Image: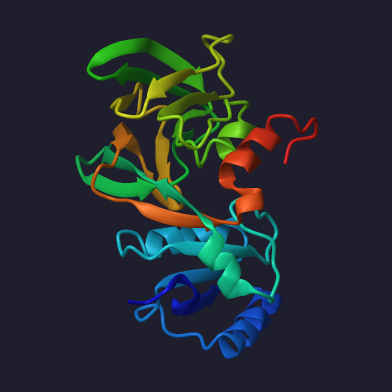
Length: 261
């Protein structure tokens, strides 16, 4: 049986030259293997690389330990070449489940994608979008005039959701954040907290005049007329964090930072 200290490590990196150099150095130092052979994936870069790695290795049962070597590193651990095996062995696991998006376009074609951070609906032209929001089959908002709206996971609540003034969710809260983007009517609506099992349907009103796109993380589909989103129960991912800097602790700290992350 392989012990934690003996686990095989694979190193992936962003295109950043510094991250590429770090990948080469760590691969040599820790006898790196291919991603297929690895027990743990070590991702070197920023949050963009972490999201790409989570998508790539989803459902493979391989935890991902990120080290910051990019612009934004909220989902990453600090970079340090020393004692990496010990850090990985002592790291805390965080289980993530993505959102599943099913979007229907104006031609009747259905597009499906998974989102670890959020599913966003965005206006495509100068005119504001008009959306109807239905939750678990019950209409809750007949007309939202806005630049867009999103449904965010706890892991994604500190990303685009926070920039749109949505709430920060503890990672184990079993909630989703429904957040408007620049709401015009109703002007004072700030969104809602929903149970993680909720099914949210967005319907584009006046879609010909006010076209919208639907985005699941980095997957975008245009001229969408309806989008249904719910948490996937058939996909999951594991992230590893240093015990002294867990994702729970980062999310809590974020709520007491006057300037934001």
